[in-house]
Length: 339
Image 1 (cartoon, rainbow, N blue to C red):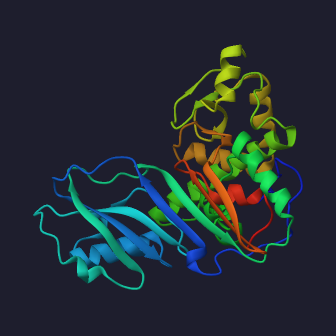
Image 2 (tube, helix red, strand yellow):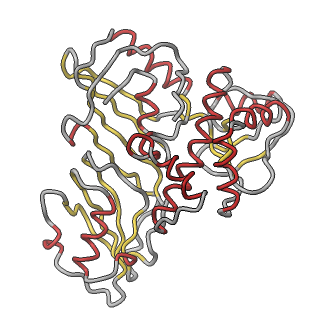
């Protein structure tokens, strides 16, 4: 994995601890729709502690006496954390077992209601985070100023280390898969995502080093804020400058796949140069052969409702909300290393 550059200057501390307890990393999923109150899909809002999403999904399937494919969720959540998220369980006979059977130290059912559709992946408005950093040895004033910069300007929209597995092992595993190693279907999807994410991060790293991660390049492809819609390239104009300034649009980078790269001119040259090494070419070829199509992702991320407070002299609490698919570690990266 390439080292990720910093957009705002040197780290403000040399080390901080996170996840000393699961309560130090809290995530609340923000739903994107209201339940209909009818139908044969039971929507459950669940708070989980120190348990991963797939483990909870299996528990729900066992509780309902159904195959795991009858349980769905909008997004994956961290294991070593306290998180709330939605699950849906398909119960065609509209008879649910006693919810008390789910109660444990890991799982608490906050609410349940019926809905007329299965919960789809990505069906969330975002996530709200509350993080506690301990053993922080840094200047409180400088940290406050850095957070104000982030709130005003946004920050690079990195894929987080979770995407790449323990010790970054998902990318080598993806290369092995592309070379012919057989993997399970669920693992295949994970490795394809890791390969795509690694290439995106390399492009974003080049833009950060150039200072253009939140600025236009000739041939830029623009992404609308809060959506996957893109447009351009088109000539730079006062209208685009105004939209960029109010975070209505963002520069974008490639999520690699088959098809023509949409960017042109300087943007295209930078993108291809950033992923032109031998390993990147192997990843690109593997993604194309796997049938993925060219897509785009915003290079810039703006946390909402960013706040901080010092709980003790060396204990910093951060809270903010992020759009779907964005990582809290991108915020932490601009402050200093955490583990």
